[in-house]
Image (cartoon, rainbow, N blue to C red):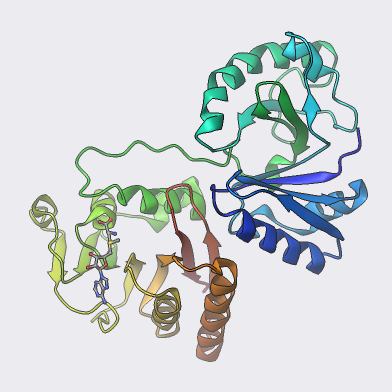
Amino acid sequence: MAMTQLVLLCRQGFEAETAAEIQDLASQAGCFGYCKTKNDQAWVSFVAEDHQLKQLVEHVRFRSLIFARQWFICGDVVHLSGEDRVSAISQEMDGIPHCGEVEIIHVDTNEAKALSRLCKSLTGPLAASLRKKNRLSAKRNHKIPRLMIMFLEGKEVLVGYHFTDNACKWPDGILHLKSPKDAPSRSTLKLEEAWHWFIPKRQWGERLSAGMRAVDLGAAPGGWTWQLVKRSMMVEAIDNGPMKGDLMETGQVTHHEVDGFKFSPSKKAHWMVCDMAESPIKVAERMAQWMANDWCSEAIFNLKLPMKKRYQEVQKCIELMNEIIAKSGLEVEMSFKHLYHDREEITGHLRRRY
Ligand SMILES: C[S@@+](CC[C@H](N)C(=O)[O-])C[C@H]1O[C@@H](n2cnc3c(N)ncnc32)[C@H](O)[C@@H]1O
């Protein structure tokens, strides 16, 4: 089977942004192809010749994609006939390299959720069948490609693969986190997920450590502050709205009822986080100023995107931030991701490079 599509999973409703982004990156990588998608299907297909797709995934780092949650190369949709899905899928391995593990997923739509049990129930038997045929390594091996099976419907699948060092480590691109009972808002999960995405776990001790000073812009009612407090940081919470009482009782939080766009720290903070519901360009500008003024070492922030041309708006924000930071002469790493807990917004991360 010719591997002629790169499938990109995304949040339902963000197909146009995902398509625009891969199209741009593909042209920069000299790979010619086109996107096929439907509104609200939660995935996009970038169609190109086999060798062009291989070139694309060699040149583009998955981490640089903002809107895609996961990607894999695959062939056309396979229609499974008969009841034995395992045997039918096992026969569709042409063009797939020898793999180190297999994951069976479905797209993230309400309709597709019904496929979840089917996916789970097939994983073990399929792995066993593929091992017998020497299509899958005897033991899990992350150093070689991962076989990706995606169910579109009960009898329609895509069969493909990706390289685990250039893909999302969570098979369906989703990090499932439990909402903590005592956090003041569900928004708390956005910051927790951002840390998981932007900071390697082995560095948490050093980069999210006790005693660090943090500023939370647009903090009320306190979901993000709660995360910082849990990491034993001292937090300046900026918001005209009220902070949840329990947080204030920890003694780690100082609440300033002032405008987050005017607040500046009296002393450099390690962390600045910002969830102010404001225009993305205004937030982007302020975030860049914080870095350019060397007011913090790292920042995590949301850019709210309620407008239609979301991809173009994000590009404008990135351009402006790059300009401001370049003028300061400081070196700053910048990256963005549309996280699972983000809705009409993306999350940005800035880190001063020393
Ligand atoms: C989405 S909520 C923040 C939720 C918070 N991160 C949490 O986890 O609970 C946005 C907050 O931004 C605040 N905000 C909006 N504009 C602001 C400004 N100019 N200065 C300070 N706070 C602002 C609002 O009062 C609101 O509490």
